[in-house]
Amino acid sequence: MIRWIVFLIFVAILEIYAFQAFKTLVKSKVFFVFYFVTSAIALFYIVYQLTNFDRSIGQTPKTMMTLGLLLLLYIPKLLVTIILFSEDIFRFFAGIIGLFAKNTESGFLPDRRKFVSKVALGVAAIPFASFLYGMLKGKYNFKVIKQTLFFTDLPDAFDGTTITHISDIHSGSFDDAEKIQYAIDLINEQNSDLVLFTGDIVNTHATEMDPWIDTFKGIHNPKLGKFSVLGNHDYGEYINWPSQQDKIQNFEAIKSIHEKIDFKLLLNEHVKIQKNNQELAIVGVENWGRKFGERGDLNLASQGLSKEDFKIVLSHDPSHWDEIIQHHENQFHLTLSGHTHGLQFGIEIPGWIKWSPVQYVYKQWAGLYENIGRYVYVNRGFGFHAYPGRVGIMPEITVIELKKGKNVA
Image (cartoon, rainbow, N blue to C red; front, side, top):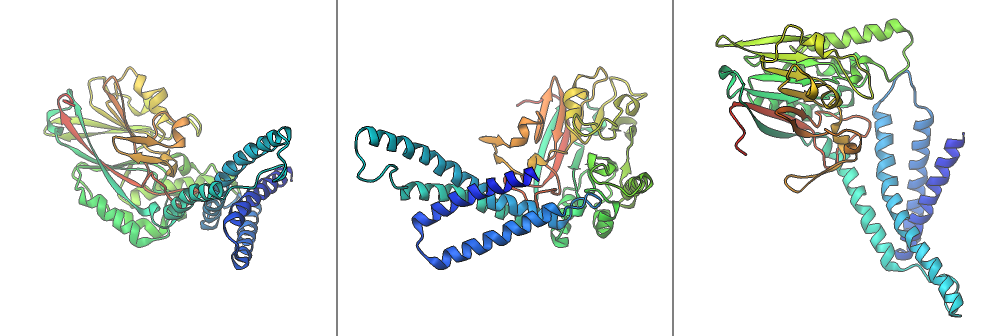
């Protein structure tokens, strides 16, 4: 109860300051009637959905819409509040100075300046437009990102091998079959030698993937195969199950999805791919994460492999690479991960800026990272989760080319 009182007080403060900003600039009564009615309806919807969240079901389109609406309405108002509150502090001290100077012609506090209100509303318009775009367009704005990596010990037979890497499908969030088919077509256009998927095929329930089986089965079968691992969401840890047996059955059903879409699921194991009498190992571990469980067993998955074998690790959570893989005595050349989604929010201008709040939690959160010749690539995610959109960090299809030799860059 206390947290709801705090939440409503916080919202009330935001609404007061937002109203002040509009009142300084707008005089139309019709506008304010519309503003109050829509704000009240939105707040009622948000509170109703949050108070009726069902832990036995988990995330639904309605809960995602609730979070989207919460961000869309209150992040801009928070910025307005910060700016106007800062002005209030200035006005308060200006009033104090005015009292000592016996300048009370305009009262204790100077009037709120229109300029500051304009600035506040202008600043607030940026996240409002961004979150709205992210929900309407950004979540399906798929980007193909290409990366070439050089290894001196890459087997000659695999020089020029291409890998399409996807991660974090989160099929339970999809609501546009045409856009998903477009993404599958993009994957197939790359015509890679390998297709690798690094986990989170659903949000929670295996049934979320039922409408999309045929679509994802349409990913072409490349000559070197399709391989996958599990992510943290695939274990069904984020809802209350009727029984442990229901949870186990769901997990088994999720594992069977991979076979249905023609992926070989690797569960703490590896496979060797042969080409012209040379080999490359794909090492797949179960989810290992600093925050979301440590089921992955790298030693078990790589049992029988030597330091000299060329190895690609599939591990959902990049914290696994940060804490274990990059330091492991049995050299792992390339690790492919996902998990972070880049928080689905940030700023990326290649060559200029790459920022997201998630970087304060994960050292490796999007793109390529290297340590003494050992690489991890963190895919920004195929789907979306929680917030039903993407702002600045777009859904990604990665294409990696393996080359023999040293990086000349």
